[in-house]
Image 1 (cartoon, rainbow, N blue to C red):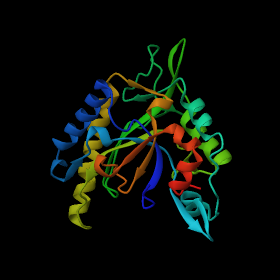
Image 2 (image 1 turned 90 degrees about the vertical axis):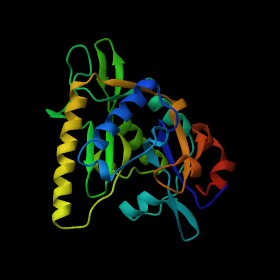
Image 3 (image 1 turned 45 degrees about the vertical axis):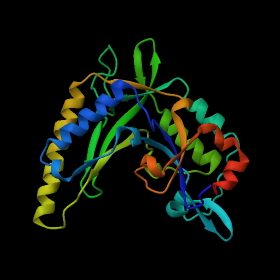
Image 4 (image 1 turned 120 degrees about the horizontal axis):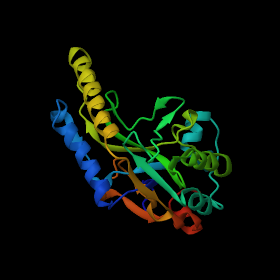
Length: 259
């Protein structure tokens, strides 16, 4: 196993449903056909993924410790993989992720928190990222209902397993999927114009998504994978894909340099 690889826990990497693939391609086409088209570099549908928890590590005084905890808190914490597969499987069982749409249920319940619409899509001009956001939902008699399940999973992984999500301090509960990169211009007038274009395209895509019917994709242990990577875009030619259950395998954890 390549020790130069880093590891992360993701969902939806690889083949996707026809409806999910169609939604991704539609959004990518909207960006490509806009004023940002010349700078947009879309990812393949298969490499697009949602990071549930980074498993990146570093060495500290001869020990393997969690990189995000060190960078965020300055604490050298070793990750604990005991029962992690069971906890992840329990958290995602019966869960779906909703993409797009203001109406998330037949009773007109909306994707809102404290009166503010949930973000469905974003363009970050500074980092050059085009992003689709999804939100965890569960099925109840009234329909699909928003859940805190993704945040609760990340909190459990932090408190019980010494793993920390990059956006932990924001109580991050969404599924964040990069659809492609933008070539960002240099500072100055061109950058100001670029930022304005990003804002305009972002609003157009959000409006399209708000007017669409919400797409629900089932999140289950079968679509949660452990990924070994050297490029954080996860291109197929350099990415290794493992089932969730390998996190119960001590030999794998040792070979991967996770413990």
